[in-house]
Amino acid sequence: MNVPTIPMLNRLTKVHKYSAAGVAAAGAGVLAITGVSGTAGTAVAAQQVADWTPASSAQQQSIAGQASTQAATAKKKAVAEAAAAKKKAAAVAAAKKKHEAAVAAAAKRKAQAAVASRSQVRKAITKAPARAVVSGTPQQIASSMMSSSQFQCFSHIVTRESGWNPSATNASSGAYGLVQALPGTKMASAGSDWRTNPATQIKWGLSYMNGRYGSPCGAWSFWQAHNWY
Image (cartoon, rainbow, N blue to C red):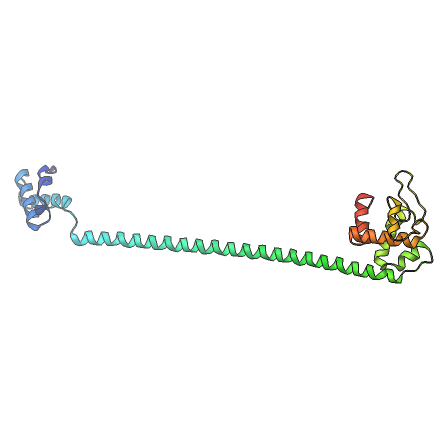
């Protein structure tokens, strides 16, 4: 026998729903309306009462407690993950900053070393003229005025510019002498005999290369890239 849900159960008062008397009254109402009696009637009444009887206060508190615990656990996990992400970001930023500082320091050291090297070259070249001679071939004179390594670079330039001829003149530009000064009168700053004295021409050419390129080798590097200096 199918027993329909009793609409009147929904109209029971709050007191009935939450008390033993309410449960008994609800059961009696079911029996009265359906006409089912005895064990079967009692079972039907009990089933329908169970279907709408709310959870006990203890059960409600247990459910609420579980929900609160889960929320607290989720919040704790979120806080921990946020802290870990922040810590990782800080570590990455610190590593990047340290790397940039190391690169900058290395570049600074390299620049300082380059300056020191150029300074040493200039000092060595500046001291060389004291050993200069005014006799011999132009090559011998030039060799006595600078280090062997700088002389090699100087020689490469002079060979291509004038073929070591102190009187070489460029018909097009008017450049003159071993180092092809343009105009040739510039070499007068090294001596009034600039037209005929290889030593004077070499002295001026060496000063020019040191002043503009740092050394004869610096001038030679530029010459190789541009075919002039």
